Image (cartoon, rainbow, N blue to C red; front, top):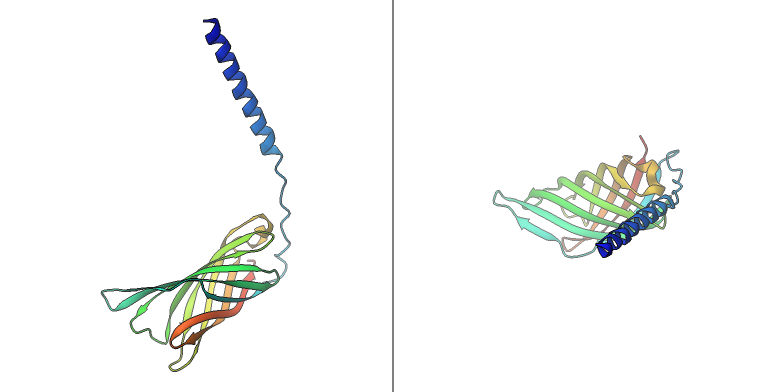
Length: 178
């Protein structure tokens, strides 16, 4: 019985020490200073290339689902890397004007922004360049980019094609706070 009480005492003391240590560690977190980005639009120039082969799924109704991952760099108001998942569902063969959606992540030395944009892709017959005009929103931010949470995103870009396959995209991302 004496050993049981001693064991229970040591166990309770251990739990109390761990609990108090955890509370003090949680309070030692240093706050992040948000960058002041709400005064004017954030303008970023970007350039991406394919980060893997595309996935093309023919659908039974004559359409296709197309997805590709892209990666590249951004510069302008801040610099960093850009990764994106591009998705389209369109008739086969693709008409000159069809919808496109992009889910993207921008990583910088100060943190991360995640969002999306959706719009239209226009590829004129015989052209080796398509234009994208789209709008979206920032959906997730790390602390430094808190001012851009739920900000509007506007994209104007060009997709380059070689032998009918896209080889890269470049353009401008403009982020504006509501």
